[in-house]
Length: 511
Image 1 (cartoon, rainbow, N blue to C red):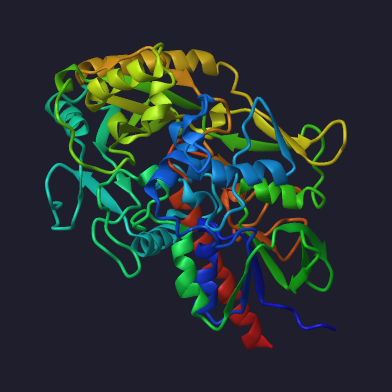
Image 2 (image 1 turned 90 degrees about the vertical axis):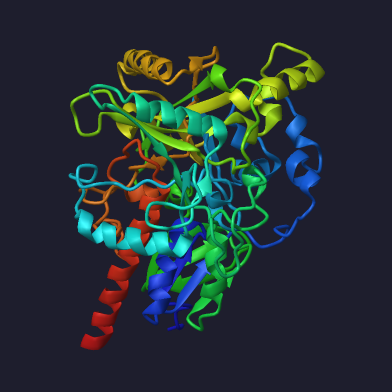
């Protein structure tokens, strides 16, 4: 019998994959990570190429998606997944990454934490998740925005943009009577103080173009300490395409290679993991329920800030917000407010009913007073499914949709938000739009922890039907609150990896 290649094979180098790898190698387990990407091209220092693209991609006609998905860096990350994943969309935009670092190359980097109410129906308690939240936060580095130089406890902060600071002061001076609406400085995975191998944010506003300083967390950064361990091995350009059960598990890759281990950890992202498991699960045309967050984008104008000078800041979220709209624990939305002046100008100029030259002049005149709010609903307001392609029976198709009555709830929310914008001295501009399902890239719930049946997993992410196959990405989150989900995915992967390391240690000890 051939010796396994590792104790664990991890598929994917995104935030979930590295979060699972670190506790395992710390416990002395042999880990092989298979990644479809590589490090080629990551050292591009030419700012013009990063902003405009080598083929002037930034000047293409607007495709209606989020500005962050239209940058050259985003197109380079997303297009290989579209072409190679075998996943199509019907009223849904399938978003995933085959690149080194996964979607952390282009994520919004906003940090949210779930509380006990959010996970009341999960098969784990908040205390076990909290330990991992603390560990991950320390590892990746996070900073709060503020309009002063240090926080209340003396920790460094990053400057709020002038328009965001103006709006926050208005909120603090006249809070809503029922406290259903909250506005606060955003917390992001970006450094205000340098860490080894990463510089502090230089406030150049290059956040969406592949942060050249490394200030924004990217899971690629964790691969350096991982690769220093004798217990860890990373193989480039190894796109996993099949999983076969034998004495343990064998992973087949697109180039015809194969690798074996007693346990496989899937960290390929919700859509990538579904594609890998398509032949191992009874996915029919109806398919797997996929939770995603319906997303609303709202342009806002602050008349008090017209023709005022902006403050140098990053282009990540400036402010976070939440608004409760019902009595159930999950009946709230969260969101973020961005300063438009720090976002890619072309995305907004392309949407103006003016020529390019006139549009650019108009944008430059009012940019410092413009904001964009993005609002996320919880996953229970979505109705999306991953099913087999009805014609070929090969590949997967995702059908996107919204929960019954969602349009009524969305209009009620817009009305409630208009009241808040007015209180904050903001004017909601024409153009508020509900994004096509999938654009949010907040995915969960396909293989939920604690569920019975072939699509369920244990609290350790192990598939009910296939012992030895563990999932650590968003697939196993039983539900999806409106909060930003990446931090929770990383913490849950860390929690599961610690559990698996303990299980293996006990098994070896008993033998």
